[in-house]
Image 1 (cartoon, one colour):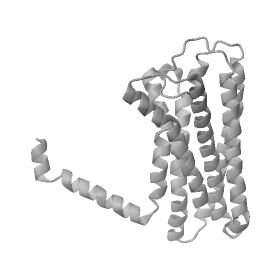
Image 2 (cartoon, one colour):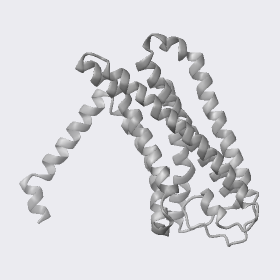
Image 3 (spheres, one colour):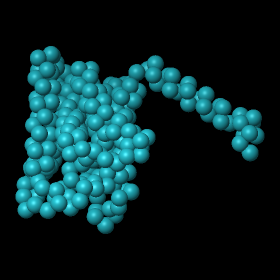
Image 4 (cartoon, rainbow, N blue to C red):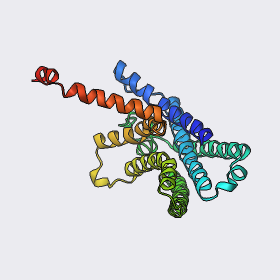
Length: 264
């Protein structure tokens, strides 16, 4: 699990570094331009890191399934070599996915202006600038990868069904809590990642607006990578104790009479 967490942390760091520094630069220097090559590179790396994160979350689901449903076979099924092979497969699949999407998207002629209306280069906004009849090639590629992602999601759901069935067969209440606590961070990260991305791309056109699209893009491209380390770190007892003390201290400061008097 810690090996996969290291890979997940790299994807989080990479996806944030792909979009946030350029957005901060544009905000500080009051500029809204990006070169054609820079836009292609940003799209490639963003799709690469997002795809790698999704594939790694699937592998981590399998890791939780084996550790709870087949604990005696864990060392055989998830040895160091098997983990390295699965991580390499995730990164290689993400690379091919990003390469295919980037090549398809930027092979289209752009004839509808050059204003994306977004703080980073995103496939739907780039396709809106194209008037080529080969526009549907990217649609078919997206449909294929969406079907693949849906199949992976079904695998995740079935795995957690087996996990819950195995946990419910544990006789002790302490065993239930321990088993569920090992799956809780992964479920939280996976739910945050999938829910924000699905809502961003599958929202009804009737509620679409530039401000909403911008907010949703920030929600699925920046918020999950920023919160993932915190979610997984909360399993650390020292960190939870420190966070609890900090919240208690903030609450005490906010509720003191002197603070209330100054606020009034």
